[in-house]
Amino acid sequence: MSLRTSLFLFEINCKYIFFTMTGVAVGSGWQAWFAYINLGCYYVVGLPLGLLMGLVFDLGVLGIWGGMIFGGTAIQTVILAIITARCDWEKEAEKASIRVNKWSSPNPQDEEEDQSEVQQ
Image (tube, rainbow, N blue to C red; front, side, top):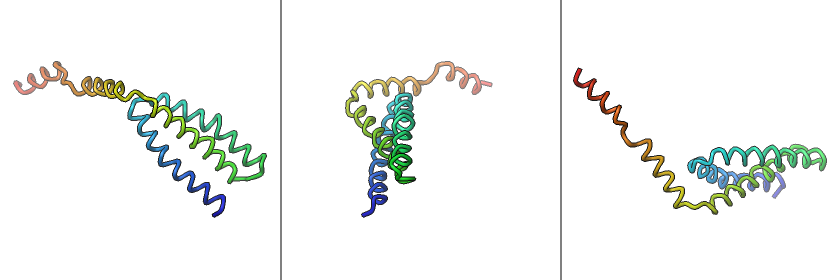
């Protein structure tokens, strides 16, 4: 199996986990954390690693791609998995319940407006 094929298979497997962790992060309301992790992994780690592998080690596009996979996607996936594993899910469920109740409870002013429209 060639290096390109191995790298491609690693990326596919990493992406499946990454998208699952991304869904958990966004669904849990951690968008700000996710944005910082994303920027740090891709631009602070992945891009320099890709340029190092591609230009300094003379691997070309394959090195840039590998650097972005290992430096960006893989590290980001590991960080999100650690955060997800260490989360207090009981506390997160309570926060979600509060948000659902806040947005799903009827507003008394809306009921008054509806009744006034029916009477007219």
